[in-house]
Amino acid sequence: MSAAQKIMERIEALAKISDEPGQITRLFASRAMRQANELVAQWMREAGMTPRMDAVGNLIGHYDGQKAKAKIFLLGSHLDTVRNAGKFDGPLGVMLSIACVEELYRRRIRLPFAVEVIGFADEEGARYQTACLGSRVLAGCLDERHLRRRDANGISMAEATKFLGGNPAQLKAARLNPKKLIGYLEAHIEQGPVLEERNMAVGIVSAIAGQCRARISFIGCAGHAGTTPTRLRKDALCAAAEFIMAVEKLAKDTRGLVATVGEIAAWPGTGNVIPGKTRLSLDVRHIRNSIRHAAQAALKRAALQIARGRKLRCQYEAVYETAAVNCSRTLSRLLGQSVKRRQKQLARLPSGAGHDAAVMAGITPSAMLFIRCKNGVSHHPDESVKLRDVQVALDVLNDFILSLGEKHGLTAAAKGGRQHGSTS
Image 1 (cartoon, rainbow, N blue to C red):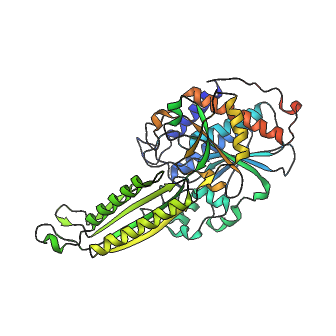
Image 2: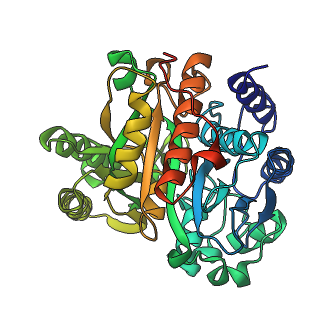
Image 3: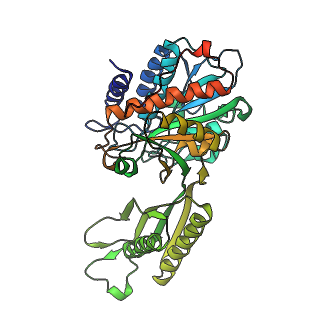
């Protein structure tokens, strides 16, 4: 069995671990997440690593360097999913990272630095609407007030963290020391169509868009659908509809901006009752922070103006924000050289999706490798990746980690010969 086939088999095994039967749903600190961590820890051991779990539930596998207390290079991605997810978003990056270390272990190579593979506990934020929770803990930038957040079943984040085996009282101590880090590399499906359009297996990420998320509530007055005159209504759903159209218009009028209302709920939710309250989500993204901030402010003003015009109340709550970041030029240049040994051209592209790499960039140089995915589909059961593209990605990672080792003093005798050439 090839290394790429082994990766695909492991992804299939992970796909069977779900909180909901018949689909892939692995939420932060759920029973499925605990089971996934146990399985992935076993694979880390087989790859020569010593696994541990930190205070928030991130799974971290350590592979020693040539010397004790050597600095650390980080590889990884996330193990949680959205609801009814695909197989590859997150887990592919973790499996590729484990396979990369497994190749070092097979060849008995120890690098001038240690390598740690991270399976982040919560990148998607599907349970508590706190994206990149795992990487925020490692970067030391988690707002601990989030521990009081409650999910749809009333379970607080602190309670859930304990269930996973973490310790919410030790989150500050889980922060990684930037002085001990060399960098971070994350492999991930592209979640877009560019690589497929260019017929390329992999590409490197130039920048990661910043994003902000908010919850907006319009509060009016419920009433009888047949007896309340239209001119006297305080219809919260109409206000929400007007706001949604304002979001779409601003996104269309602002180059590079994407803005999405992905959730909406109305109360009391009865066909013959005027909605008295609505709550909706807002997601705004751009690779320039200034443009994103301006858009966010404009949409907040629009929500308040719509409420005033309809004599309603509006509650606007910012729940999450991450800045746009540029990927490390040094790591990206080295990664690009490894890519060009495997395919004729090098694609550099921005990421509109958020990633743990954007958070980790706050404490260490970070880079990303994108892998082609069919039709650019992600966050959906139809996610699909070609076996040969997985092999190319693994070849690139293997080459990259040895090249990085050379920069830090790895000798030819220590690493053996490297095989170059195209596999795509």
